[in-house]
Length: 116
Image 1 (cartoon, rainbow, N blue to C red):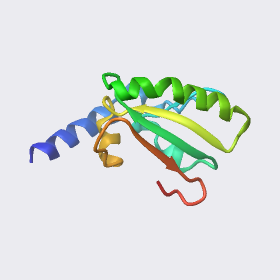
Image 2: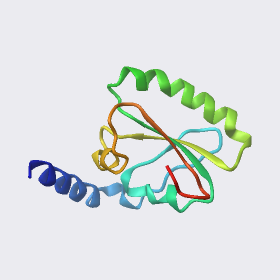
Image 3: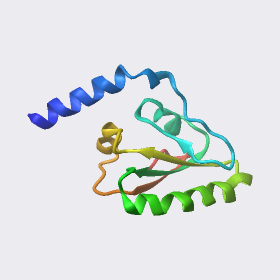
Image 4: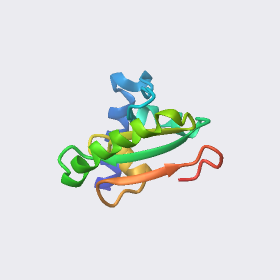
């Protein structure tokens, strides 16, 4: 019951967020930022997505970030894949959507099948 109330409160907060119209900022050579309000861009995209769900307090996540930036720079000439991150600590709805068990959690989402 408490979890259901928490989920509903979180979803309501996301729905009322100022960022609901915000799109993922996709800049070649940089890491795109994904939120719950723009997650549909991944599933409606003609590109593959490499998504890292992180938390700012997570030591492993902090170590991952420079590697993620380097990957984005390396993949700059590959237009069919987007390197992205999400602060899943702040975006609890993403934790639930991706059934997260730990930080960081990394997914590859195929454009062709939509499979995670």
